[in-house]
Image 1 (cartoon, rainbow, N blue to C red):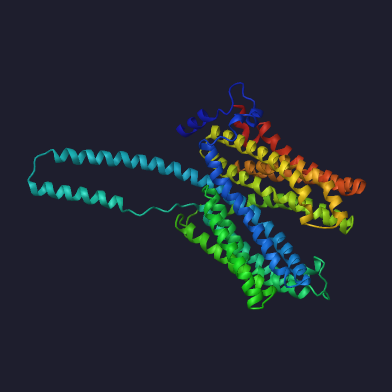
Image 2 (image 1 turned 60 degrees about the horizontal axis):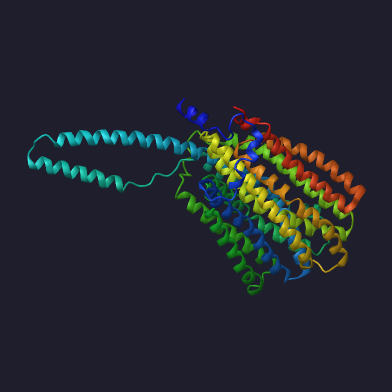
Length: 520
């Protein structure tokens, strides 16, 4: 009862009369202030954003090396990577998102229990010390006194040398087991079905791309267990609000890949096989580093406990799987509709889309920070901190969105020629530019809202709302692309992202679900 009373005392994000909408405007002038909350968000968001951008940069370098082999190999590897990423995405997003929230909740509850236990031990220790001190006031012979002093000294030193107790986080062990199983299943699936999957992607049996594409995909699939284990481990560290360790591991792994690529491709003359081998080795190195660091903090082998979260993982994982399918289908459909407009339209759309999506990685940093802090706050029933955190990360996302709009508005106008020299493609890029730049504030809010929903463990609403958004967006994309062509696609995608932001706004603004405390 005491913890609940404390929680209710803290839930004062707005002064009476309480209006849930005030959470979006609360203390907006302090949005860039480096107070305790601001520093915690920065400590989590900055390394997370850097880690998320490290992989795309490494992939660009990887692609540059493969491009030196030949256009056939480059095209083949491009198809294989797209196929591998699409299959991986189905498992990765639910696994990492759920792990972050569950670990943050358990770690917060565990910290509270340890604090209470330490307080009790301090009281007991103080009582025992008082008894010993009282006994020492009783006159005894010197020999007994010296013996008592040596015992007290020994006990003091034994306390200082006691080993640090590892945390027991059942969700961490559950995530690693599920990640390993999913990785093995993914590897087996891709290796055994590589040829028909590549055929489905458009590489026929007589295509010169089939050989290198199948070799690359089969070898790359051997690294699937390491990829899923690494991301599960990153989810655990995010739950601990530690995004620096995953950043270091990611940079080391990507640097290893970049170093090994030219050695295996050109020195050993392994070509596409060398590129896949270098990537797999770097993934296992990254996985090893993360597991080594995690085992120093968590007892991951404590598998006998009855509190493993398999059923909870599977239930919420299925919900987020629906969400991933909805998101993937919308983006894939837009690319397919652009391809039907012709190669010029597809080329311009691809450039705009990649820039449009790449900038989301920066907003994801705030989403990760919001998710970790909110999950901890909700577990402790610290509703005042939950409201303050949601308010701050959403405001930061909005500020970031406007900055990106300005930067992209100026930068892409002059930098489009880095992607193509074709005047027809450049003309279409200039048409898409207002949408790419102008929707950045909306995009940033939508991505941060995802982290806020996940931090509140509102997975059911996050899945159901996005499925509804996807249905409406698909209808808009098909209708607008058929009537307005290239520009219609971007109107459709703008509607899609606006609806994503709107459903997040509605959940908090109406104080429903986990946000009902805003009306108390």
